[in-house]
Length: 640
Image (cartoon, rainbow, N blue to C red; front, side, top):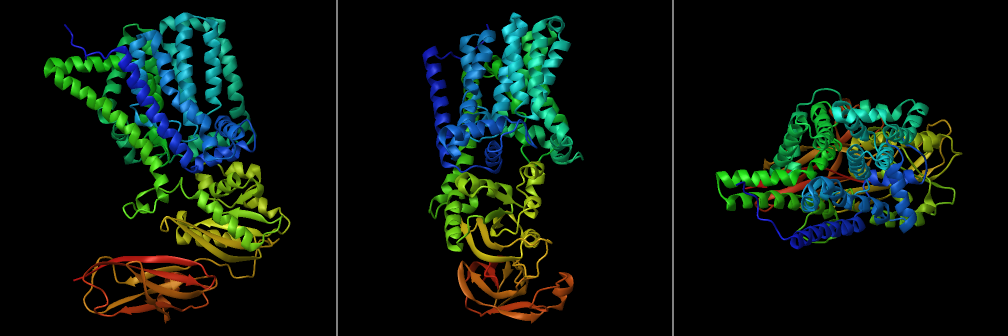
């Protein structure tokens, strides 16, 4: 007699499922309210303020959901996420709906509960990103198609057509769902007859309406969206890191659950070979999504988001995962003991659910950035979804202090800072951006060209003035020098105003007054570029005995350097002597316009005995004549 895990009473199973579901949803609700918007989220909100059927990187669905949330609940991060939260949190209900007619009510409840144990699925809905509607409409499409081929009712064909139309209006990756559906109707003999029925063709007609936005946009704008998703964002060169795809997925899904899901896929494929069309359909949807990403992993985009794409392949497997877990229990019971088998399943489910909680709290931990706790260093946490409220408050004070006129403009070095300003201060719209880096990487440069919010749009304005803002914490000093030199070409004069430092310097911004754009894109006024410096001595981890000479060089190709100071263990130690001749630096760095050249060297001695025995950290701060301050040359030293 085959062993099976001890069955929980139906009421207790429902209680556990409801408790886990409510716990996950509660975390999502709190973090959705407390966290600022991520760069992708804020872009979709901004896109919603320019209604269109498609945008440069995606069709309209993400923007529609973000804008609808704001329309209903006002301009806030929670409002933007509201409908995504609703769709993402309903995934367990969709899994139950998928499973119930095929496996029965109890196993459908188990499958719904197990959806909370895939970390990326439990996390779904916290962020306002297109993966949420993509997966929602994907499951809806699978369920409607399965019912259409099993029951032959035209209402399900129409529903499948609608779900697919909404899916292709969400993301280009929905093409894998369409591929899987096509293969099912082509490969399984019992389904080929549907090619001769009106239901399938009505569904295809509805699908075609959903394809129109994407096709129309690409035909009008030289296939920019297709180029980005198929060509530009991927290196299409072999990357050894891609061979780790399976191992990364196992860690993300949790190893035991990952094995169980692959085992489920194996069983479904065997059932399909035996003629079970329903199980075969789920196997094809899972295999298409998992297989394509596995095969392309060594050549595809591994730096941005591709690691979560296979989630669309795991969700169809949840329907039959409870059967696999019962088989695992039986095998372990026969080989070891019932107790060992029960513990193994408990660990499998527990690790998965814990992974979902960890994924949520890992992202949500950014709310702790505002805690003033000596036990929690901001350096340990990401700040991409924190600090924007403080930034906009500070921006308001800068605008007041600079007495900006009504027709003055705001310009940023990146698109997400500009969009964050527009969300918090609709009265300041439009905010321009000079983003020629991230906007291109994210496939959005074309969109800002269409919206006339980029540098080309500034050229058409009639000599405007205003405020220019850089997010320094996302720029290296050479990057910022390039940004400011480019910006100075748009204005007659750029004057440094102030800096904002948040979370112990982990998030930093600089503000500049910009006066009257130059018609010929050139300016005679010095550009207030930041200083670039280097510490020659001491080297990292130096052992210091006696006097410690601290020396190096600083260049500023704008207004020049005003002062260089030495800081030790966070305390100001003294001002360095600046102006030592460094012709080697002039040659190596090709210095052309620094007013101090060739006097670019600095030095400051730290007398013997000034530092107590032990480890110390020093760094230099340089103040340019513009007033802007940069920190550089952090070194750890040891005094015996």
